[in-house]
Each structure stands twice: as C-alpha cells, then as structure tokens.
Image 1 (tube, rainbow, N blue to C red):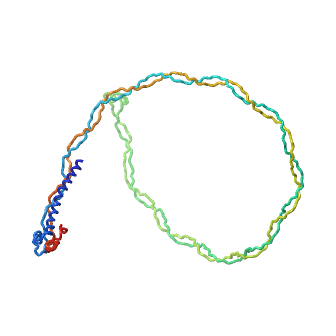
Image 2: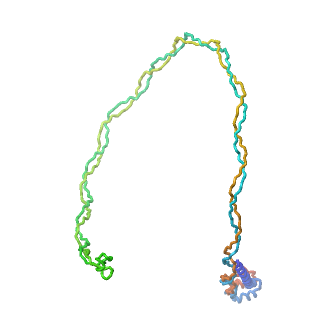
Image 3: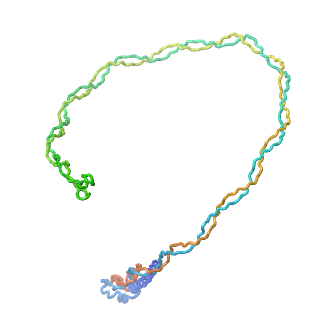
Length: 426
C-alpha cells in the first residue's frame, strides 16, 4: 500500500513538472510564428531574419525542453513482521468423577385376578308343526296325430356349355448349341528343387586330456586319543599331523581342429513336363421337341343341383296338459325365544405397588488447574530496503524551426497570410 502511494505521488510530480515545459514550448512557437502574422513586413523581416531574395530557409535555433526520465532507487521502508513465541498460561479444566449411588423406585404393576359372575342370555328354541297343503299340478297327456308336410326333393340336371381350350401340339425342331470339350495339353515349365549337399568343414573343439595322480598330503591328527595316546601326539595333548594319500585329477585342456561333415541346402531350377486340361468350344446339333398351342371350341355337360316340392304324411305325438289337484303334508319350524343363565369366568387387572432398587452412576465436575503452552504471533517493526521506480524531469536541448521557407514567412506585406498562419508552425 505504501509503495503504491509512493508511485502515485511520483507520477503526479512528473506531470506537474512536465506542464510548464510544454507551455513554454508552445509559447515559444507562438512568438516565433503568430507574432509575425499580426505584425508588419518589417517586424516579419526582423523575426525571420534577412530574407534577402526569399529563397533560403530560416531556422530559429536550438531550444531546451524538460523530458521525463525513469530510474530505480533503493529506499528504506518500515514494515511489520510476526514472530512466533512460546508462552505458558494456566487454565482451569473440569474433570468428571463418576460415583455409583443406589436408589429405590416405586412402580405400579397390573396383576391379573380371575373372578366369576352370572350372565343371563337368550336362545332361540325351534318348535316343529305338521301342516296339510293342497296344490295344483299339470298332468301331460300324449296323443298320436296324422300330419301333412311339404319337402324339397333334390335331383341332378345336366346343362350343356361351350368353352375354348388351348390344345398343345408337339413338333420336333433341330437346335444348334455350343459345348466346352476338354482337351489334355502337355506344357513345359521349371520348378525349384532343394537338395542337401554334403560339405566338409573344420571346427575347433576343446578336450580335457588330464590324468589321475596320487599325492601325499599332511592332515591334522585330530583330538587327543585318536592317534594312539598322548605319547604319540608330541609334548602334552597338542594336535599333531599325519600324512595321507589321495587321488587328484590333473587337468590338461587341449584345443584341436577336427573335420566334420555338414549338409547345406542348395536350391536349383529343374525343367519338367506337366499336363493341363483346356476346354475348347464345339458346335453341336440336337433335336428338340417344341410345344405350341392352338385354340379349340369344345362342348361339355355341367351337372346342376335342383329341388322339387313333394307332399308327405307322418304320425306325430302331441302332448296336451290338464290340471289336477293334489294334497301334501309338510313340517314348519318356528323359533321361540327362551332366557337362560350361566356362570362366566373373567380376568380383571388389579393395580399393585412394588419397589425396586437400582444403581445409578452420577458424574461430579471437579475443577483442576493445568499449565498449557501455546504459540502466539508477536508483531515486530523492521526496516527493509526496497527498489522504487522514480520519474524525474531532465532538461534536453532540441533543434527547432520557425515558419519554414522565407517565401512563406516574408511574403507580401499586404497579404493577410504572412508566415502562412499559426497552423503552419511546428
């Protein structure tokens, strides 16, 4: 934040320093150009110099302007840093101490109790009674009656019909066709034949032509008592040595070249003759039966089924009904209400108070002081060296020109555009 404020202040100072220089430069050009525009020819000639023949350029000379220049400076700034520091402080903590307490509790339970009571109830008692009833029935009576009826008797009638049919006619016609006749042709060609050719080569083999030798070697005698007693082991019971013989293979590696026969495959082209079947076209003639059709009128009889009516007589049994009165007996049942008593056993729950003892754990909070170590951040003000970009206004000499050619600056005194006006000034 401090660095940004510093940059803003420097930029504002640079702008304030640059403003007068630009004003002075503009004023200088105004004096060099716009003043001759309003003056007489003599004043124009004094400003622009001796024009002479008005054919040479006139220069106003060098001038000094302020130019901004940036540079890097090292400045000392103050900032705050935080350092970690271990500190101790006392805190009060509460510890839960459990305590077991026995308590007595009264509770009510419902105990079932059986009781007896007399209940009155009503039952339906059936009473049977015999009654006589008359009813009418319809009695069937069968009779045989002669009946006349008409039937349709079918018969077959034949009707003549004419139709056109296609009659086939077979003719024998000669037909030419082409067949492919196989021919066997002998051809000559070459084929690759591979055979094995024996070849004698020399290869290097290594052979061990060693032999067995018997050598005498001294070995330790071993612990005391294994070599014939302490008297034969030298002074005291120190271990002695003995000489033994053993067979040793003496190696003699010999390298020699031996000839051997190998078979190498050789491929060569061998001419041979083979047969090939070639089909050639051949023209042949055969007789073919061809069927052609012609139309022909023919007459045929068609059977038609027809019916004719005929009267017939038949005997039919006819049923007729007449009413007849009959009597029957039946039983009726009538329900009579009757009151009765009975003893009913029922269960009633009676409340009963009881006591029980149970154990409860109670926690008591006991205060306790503890010392804890914690890390805190302590602010410390330090000075640091930082690099800052600074803008300074530096004077610079530049080459400037006035109105340009003498012809445009030192024109006719009566002309209103002496020096070309302010718009031609650079």
